[in-house]
Image (cartoon, rainbow, N blue to C red):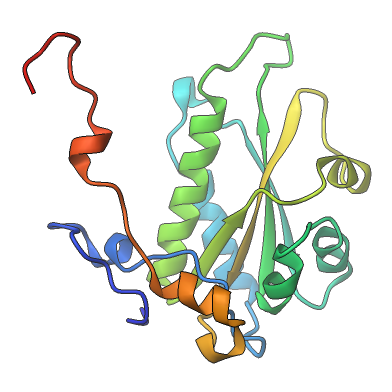
Length: 195
């Protein structure tokens, strides 16, 4: 993995996780081959889910294909400035109800785990990803056969790390500023317990 966005404060975390970040600098010359793309989706497919419901759905769009043109066309705002260089876009949708209409309370968590598994597999393949919520959900519904009860959730850009110098100054700065809140702010204490 490139060392342009160093992690500070990560203790005893595997490098596939500690060196990961959501880049906006993708190599426009990189082509994602079908085998690698298949492994990314397989990693997502084999992630855990509540009661093995597997509520995730995917649409793969390799750059240069009609599918990519359609999915890229649903992106909004700033995402269009950098996502064009990604080798592929992956639409991730989530089934929030069973065919019988029963709610799947943990479906979003499960879909998130699928994206996380895809992300780690990408890192193992020497690739980078950036998930984005800025896309037109209705346009995706119009373009894809999205079943009832399934909600488009996120679009994930996948590719090889590109040159940060190709980014505008604001984006380049954001690439290098990588931080996380301390665990002391994230761990919920028991009500009334001494801190």
